[in-house]
Image 1 (cartoon, rainbow, N blue to C red):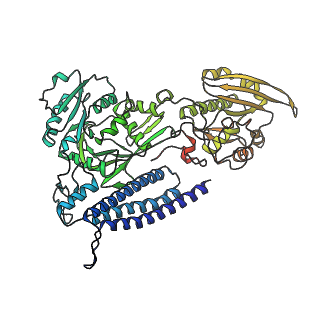
Image 2 (tube, rainbow, N blue to C red; image 1 turned 90 degrees about the vertical axis):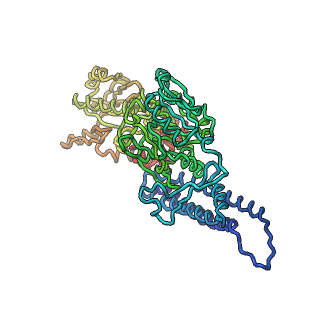
Image 3 (cartoon, helix red, strand yellow; image 1 turned 90 degrees about the horizontal axis):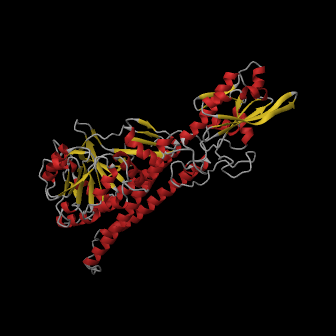
Length: 624
């Protein structure tokens, strides 16, 4: 199966490069239509100026459409590359991604050259049409890289243009200061007015301190008061509902405002990149700066954050999540609202996860910078809403690692076809099995791991993620001794019951006997055998074979690998779900390894069919 996937990836890479070649030819031909040709003085003029202009616009739109689609393909391939666990496959995806990026750069460069005209006015008009009409375009103005010396405030400069609306009619600054206090509000409002006079501001403040604001409120500022107990995301959604402009700046944790924010830059890239959200870098008042871009992986009840970016465009980093203030289309924010009744951290991170799930582009442009306060990203309570929303039991950020129990993560034992079980559910079973072997050893009983439980220990050093029960065996002569452990099992939170008494005799010794050990969600079937594989080793003065099961060493048949191979047949290291999930009559029927059942909740991080049904690395944790 793995070889098949490698072949598919390689073929896919070849196809992508072939498509790049074809698009390159098409684009070069299309770009030629943008460039006026020099005609012979004896040849009559066939194209009227207005016809040529229409042709230019059509070609330009066609190229823009190509660019946007290529951009989306690159994003998809980059996402796939992050999720592939095999270094071989990751490497084979790198070349088509690089080819597509090169093609995108060539299209951009060629288009800019082809659309240049002689007059400055025409250049401005063309640039505006290529980059969107909401804000004036920018251009690197210096002839070399020394033009901005010594502080480099200059370099990329916004060009003059007349065909765009006033910026104060385009964007509203949305400030949620319910929990930050009046002092921040009183400092920020004059600072915003200094750099963006009359820009609309929607401000949320604490209802208890609303009347204590010591500042003159300008007509462009609307103030809304809320109780301090109001959920953060409800406040944000209510404020966004009052925005009248095309764009909104969600000024998260803003404590100081300066010209460094460069809001026009963020609005411009919403159009240029067709982005859902465009953020800037941020810094704290103690001086620490961060480019604000993170990659995430939500998989198998685990959410992992990693600082960094896989690729960039227009000097902006492509991100899965950003932490600072960001600009978005107001229509996007109203159509895709923040989840209700959540903390700010959980709500925004859920919003970005949903954007990622729907292949929406989020970027950070670090040359725009905001001054913010530090949010409680390392506090468990900040993430509780997200944990419950996504059924996440582990969140790992660059700064901390947070764990959530079954109740906090709303992740019990849902035995659903096609889904991996939660870690807390699997842990309940593994703890019960480990307790059984611990008490067996204490009582001097001979016990062994068996069946699919043994297969899980062999393949995963733990419980199979799709397990439905557990199987262990004991020497039938220990039947009474096992029964006497009933009280100890009950103290540990389990119940032991007798299903069948042992019988006499096989080869002159007692045989059989069955117990059931139960926890709230699981049961362990405990079978008596008149002869144990470990017994043979002990007769040779060799201790039993031990295999790791979720951190503990437990006894198994003499050769667990041989036992598993002969018990389950072909390709046992590829995966097949439990026979109960496959509607088989028993576990003695042949399995069909190498495939997972379709998931009943497509797209959920527990879905088994998102994984290659082979190997164990993909189940060991999420790494972006």
